[in-house]
Image 1 (cartoon, rainbow, N blue to C red):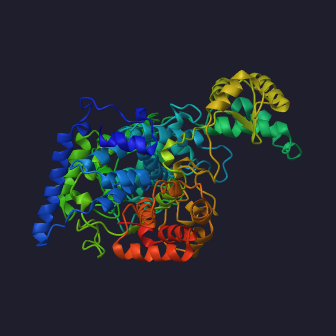
Image 2: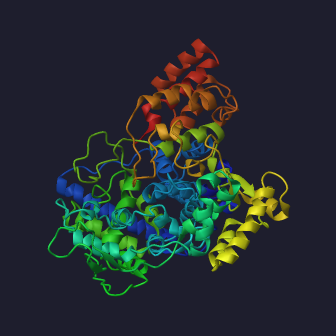
Image 3: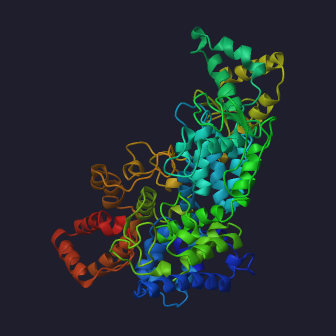
Length: 638
């Protein structure tokens, strides 16, 4: 039986979650290709060492590799069962099989989703916005689950149009979350996908870069002109209900759903491709209020007319970003993946593109760019190659990097786990493999004032489709009155409401903020008192705004919060179940170490822990758990 199959059984995963081992469907499924690609990278790193007259680091031991591979690939520590099996089995191919197991498991997409949510600023809600963004969140999550190629994902986000309630069009959430801030959205897009920092050029020529204000506006022209669905048939009705004496009525609340959550969650127009210069434009190459056409600032030039609307500016932008910017687009995502796997980018910061020739290892950077293109922007396949390199397996190096602008390959630097890695690892200790729990799904039901409304069994998509198709005020009033009657009638919540509503409710899976599930399944971002917030989860307002800085709240959370309640003093915690069958104190201590730190204790540590158990009895085991979970070894990745 394959090692990955045994690991799946130990982790409680149904074997159906692992793809069958058939003939390679892609290059990344071909072991020979992965080995050769990984070896090519290692050769570049080895050559760098020779030039530096340094000794190539040794490969780390199984325990360090095990923990590193789990935390990097799936964002959690291994369960006690997974760790014990891997450490005890003798198989020269076990590291490669472990990587295959991890990348094929649901944990990969869960951990990768956290990365995508941070990068794209995906949150459940937006401050000041009534409509939720669950459909957009679900679109991004599904794209990660299905391993959508990065160029396709980028293209679909940048060219998006339609309604967020349609699962096929929900990528419009990328623009809707920045509605009214088109220039900021463009600056973010350039930073995310092309590593170009253009924020300053919104107001003036960038004194620290090469972007002029005119160039920024020429680029912004591609996405300019983002409209909503046709609100005109509802305009008079909405104005009537907005009067002060009606704002607290159920009529107003029902109208808000249509106005904000139907019309307000649509994106019409494909991008005008032209834009007026702002009134404070201050340079000689243009006049305030002058209409200019879209033009790309680098790569293969794409130019749009300044005399007529293009109508497909966003599509033109998407194609330019993904196919006409030379090595820049593949380089930026290849470097992001390198940083994700190795701990630091080949060049830093990862959101500022550097030409391969200007990096400290140009040959390898070129190789990574070619590999990304050769793999058709398959991020899982790309990471699979990196995880199989000897470079990934280097022993940890506590010394600072010798290359401040990027990775110097002399061993993994010590870094604190992300908030999500800490949470997911604690959940693993508390309840076992968290990937056995059902994934969160979007709620398609209609809600008014937070209560589910049974409107002829319709979903929000069906409501949206019907409302957006209305083209007269009279028809809109008739439709609204019918909708309002259903709202006032109620029903459709926890009971009743018809078979369609009950069936719909059974298919919905949601979790509260205290549920013991993966961070990717919890409300996003976490509330201020949650462990995720305390350990620096991103607020999803700014790109990759997570923090790993220490604070007093983190210490208190570990001493008095989740760790004490769900681990130390919880006799039903999965952690303690791993002790079943252990007949001696020595074996119990060994299993606790493996469960928490993924390694057995040293003889010196064993002596200390035996003394603790002898002095404190059964409470000694709880004290050991508390000490190990709060240790730097648990909280840091090496």
